[in-house]
Amino acid sequence: MNTADLFDQLVRKRRSVRAFKKQALDDETLRSIFTTALGAPSNCNTQPWLSAVVSGDLIEALRKQIPAAVMQGEMSMDFPYAGKYDGIYRDRQIAAANSLYSAVGVAREDKPGRDVQFFKNFTFFDAPHVVFLFLPACFVTEDNTGVREAADLGMYAQTLMLSMTAHGVGSCPQTALSFIADRLRETLNISEDYKLMFGISFGYPDEEHASSAALTERAELDTLVRFYS
Image (cartoon, rainbow, N blue to C red; front, side, top):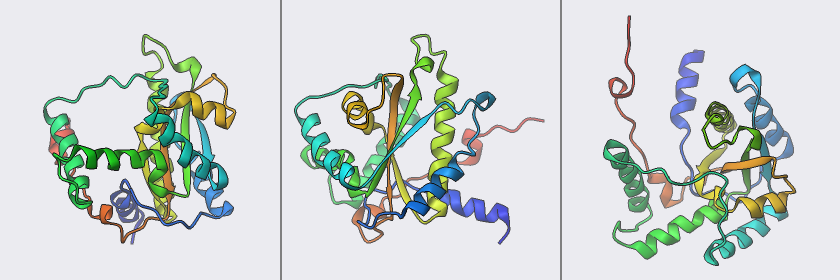
């Protein structure tokens, strides 16, 4: 298999995993994954990100603390969650959600059931590891001048998840993990100089779990790509 085919296979294999085995990654594999991800591109090679990787006893503590804090109304986001999806974007969002709910046996109209599924975000879907991705505060401005650096962080996150996939490790990027930024900064001893963008739960996928049947479709090439000459 040539390099192009291998890469195509790698990209297609990456998906959002919502059930993980308890087996933790060894330190060598962890460091290898994150070392490879450092090859991600960024504007002028500024590398504007900070990764906080949590495992072991600390992730178990967060698995208990975070859901309780959210249930009690604790909320602190560094970036507003004010975007609204309309039209085709809303259609795609609903289709993805319906695929997951259907796979785990939750009806779309079953709001309590959907809430239970949503709250699994805050226990990291039982993953043995989670990484919180921070953007330096100097790039967080009201006039959106730091949007380039946010894009850099996104490119790093995709490179990181592909690196995980190459090692047989599943991942799930989660905006929900940015809802408790202040608590995480305090717990991880991270200064206000860094703002939490989102988190990624990761570990070896539990392929037997019902959620593994949830599949999302991608738009046709000509819908999203225009070729000019």
